[in-house]
Amino acid sequence: MKKSIFISFFALFILASCNKDEKILDSLNNYNTSMETKGYHFGDKIEFPKEVTENAESISISFGDKETSDLVIDPKFFTLGDNAVTINITRDGKVLSQDATINVFAKNPEKNLIYEIVAEYPHNTENFTEGFYLDGNTVYESVGLDGKSKLMKYTLGSSTNSKEVNQPQDIFSEGISSVGNKIYQLTYKAKKGFIYDKNTFEQIGEFPYPNVIGEGWGMTTDGKTLMVSDGTKNIYFLSPSDPSKMIKYISVAGNKEVYDQINELEYHNGFIYSNVWQKPIILKINPKTGEVVGKFDFSAIAKKHITNEDNVLNGIAFKGENMLITGKNWDKIYEVKIK
Image (cartoon, rainbow, N blue to C red; front, side, top):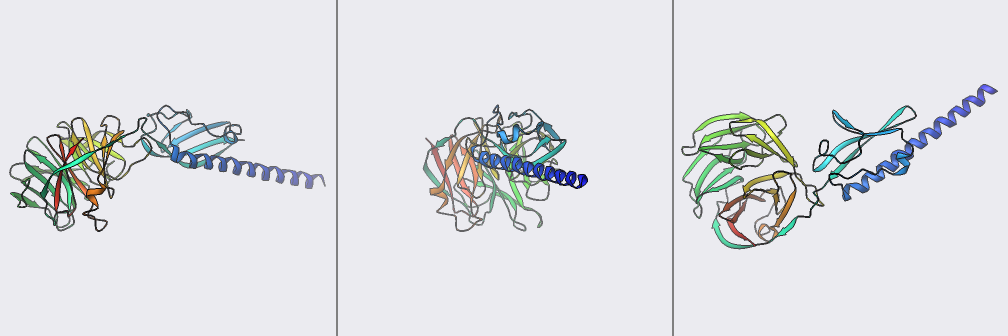
């Protein structure tokens, strides 16, 4: 009889403990879900609900092979944007774990940047634009799609290429930039880039991507480093002398929004300008922090050209202090004055 009472008591204890664990995890999940929209800023303390803290011997947050019990949004562990983490709660000699997303936003709101169209130029509708920049009055453009990829240049205002080179049939060309007398060109999924002589378009080298870069999307330069996007929230800084090596990276976020699919890039006057794939916006990004400090809404222009999911805004360059924009298979390049 005593044995039966003990077993029954033990079973009730286990059941109560399991129910308590479920309540803790439910409370944690509700909190994490509510905080995904609100987000955090660097320096904020993570205030888990009492249901969690009062029933935990310890709490830690793990990021792959890193872990911290300091519940503060510290840039040593967190990046701007979304952070995939696991929250570990130790109680009664066991560990309760729950996966979560912690969004870290820029502290300052980005400005809504205003523009006016001051000129329009022709753009070849066969160009599936992936890379685009202006040098003097010459447009350098990288065109994508398997079997149709090429590097070209032409005078702004002309539809005739003054020079072009085709890529192999299995190459999907992406972003381009130049440092000195070299043009660097990314590829979409080949995990490598090409280097060309800027004058002759002769291929003079190629390079593998650093392991952290999965795909090639956009590219620009500040004259000292190559800045590369791969369709995530990150922008990677590579050495022009050896683009297979990453110097550093930044993650991009606004004050209330997480951005991924960072795409075509252009560096101008100390800032990186980037479009976001399939969105009619261009972000102005602080290259030191990844914070979005300004945003253009080009919906009025984009809606004239977007007829399917492919022919989106995807070309940024600067002509003096004015911006040039175009898109995949668009028939125009627009020059806009930033107000």
